[in-house]
Length: 152
Image 1 (cartoon, rainbow, N blue to C red):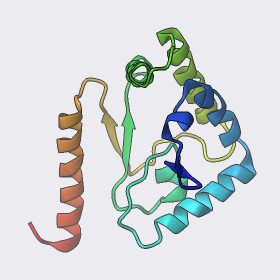
Image 2: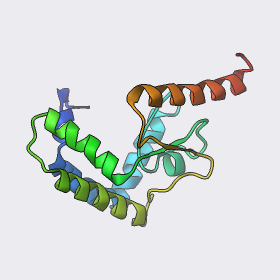
Image 3: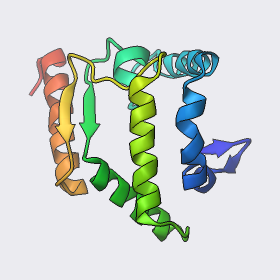
Image 4: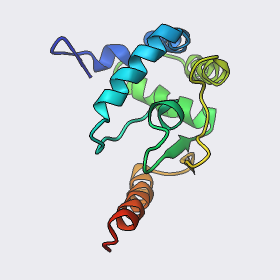
């Protein structure tokens, strides 16, 4: 992720920023502006996005929707390892509390709450490695492409 041509990935993925994300995402004007930007990005299709309202609000007519989930403990552990690998000093309990708080806020916010779209494929990756996840998701995408094009 770049901001003004500077890589800010490390900064925006910190636990400190994560503690504010859901509160800012509750602001209707912020949500509206970001949804418009995201819709412009996907106007010509051929885009892969992730987010808590992508399949319900941003792209409700997407050709393939995956509702990816894992237990809060698994997601917190993955995030914890990611933060440690980047040199941050964090405690697992802090990361778990952050994940649980974000889930609670995002699921209960008034605008664009976290919801699974009715036509989304539920995908629990709690006990999957990256390769297995990739293979399964790749197969879902191939099925959609084959159905649309009629080509095997």
